[in-house]
Image (cartoon, rainbow, N blue to C red; front, top):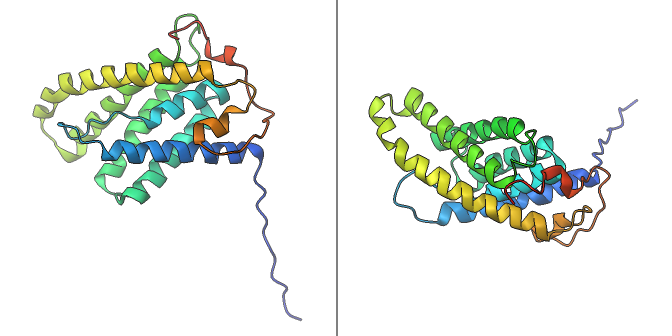
Length: 206
């Protein structure tokens, strides 16, 4: 008797499709990010964080972590720095940002919203990267002389990205149909786990 080959079928849920589309949008923005010339190495606008903030507000931290993780890995493969020091710097920044967002998005929505989330996540991102660079790449305290420049960039881009995310959250519908609008796809699946906009604490920041 010959063994019949067994087929493994992977069924994608509407949530999987939504995360994939949002991750694709974040990856596209990260590619644009990489093409923007800036005077200081390591300083980027972090446009993909806009998608992460929207996902966090609408679908929760777990979905935001998936989108951010897929963006880091796929972006590094597309840009050709997977498993290089740049990859680990990006991964460290993303992890620090996500850990910060896991805490701050539970704070009272009256006082905290996308702008404050974005600012705090930006500082966590750059702080994690500086710490890794100090421990691994540039073991010299002179690295911390750049802290004021990185802090100014984190504050500036954090505010800009937070304002853009807040604006999009106000304009996009809250009934689960916003995925296609964000990711520039034509998908219109209703998701059973979609949350109303009030989850973001609409009075905070926005």
